[in-house]
Amino acid sequence: MSRAFVREDEGERWQPPSPRRAYRIVWRGEAAQAPEVVRETDDLIEALRWLQARDQRHLFELRDGQGVLLATAS
Image 1 (tube, rainbow, N blue to C red):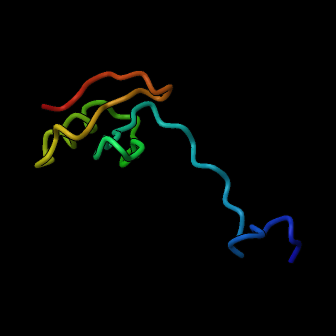
Image 2: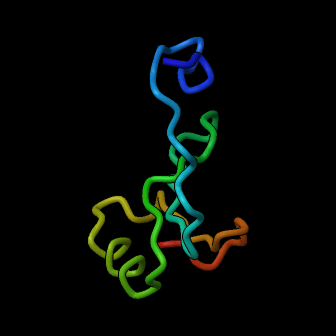
């Protein structure tokens, strides 16, 4: 197999990047940690329902595909 399709550092096959979604749910977590995307979707209602179902929803933010803050859960 050509080395062009294997990551040199991990030995895994190359995977194309996943398509950008319209909405991202970001976990803010600790102040010292960088925010982490935990869920992506194209459905705004699904994203809001997912946020509502979380116990610690105050730690999450809803952002659009470009990273603009749309809502914080409280």
